[in-house]
Image 1 (cartoon, rainbow, N blue to C red):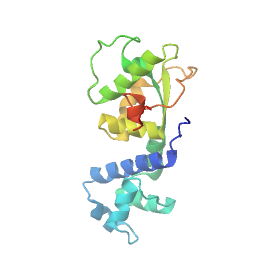
Image 2 (image 1 turned 90 degrees about the vertical axis):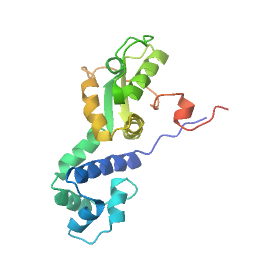
Image 3 (image 1 turned 180 degrees about the vertical axis):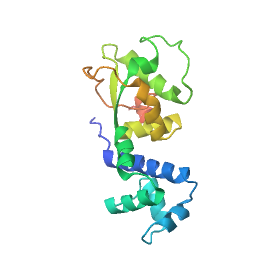
Length: 187
């Protein structure tokens, strides 16, 4: 059975939306507050669509929103793309050698740590690095119960020290049985 590759556009839109929502909330604004501060007539529902990644906005609209929020559009986009393709050191994240399950938890990163352990245990010949695409990154942030922006900040310390490492290959799925993570049944 051929596994489909997730479309990175929806994940990137969700990451962009999460950044917009974070900036709006940092100002203490509601969706209506932001919509009223834009130079064009835009509904609260449209702003919500941008924030949840269900509606695309033009570059011009993004700039207008960023201007209203007093945030730099290039910096906001840089944060989005910083965690849309992230390489992590699984051994450091797991905090152990494969097979050792006695290490403590990382609080909110516990699910990600368990995924790193399982990945290393099932692929002991791997070099210990993995590249998270935008869809996987967003799914892991959701699984950990934090925003993609928060996950990016926390994973910074788990980036590989050497760019010469070969990443773990294959699709990346959240912790748990692969079939359950994708909502598939094993038949």
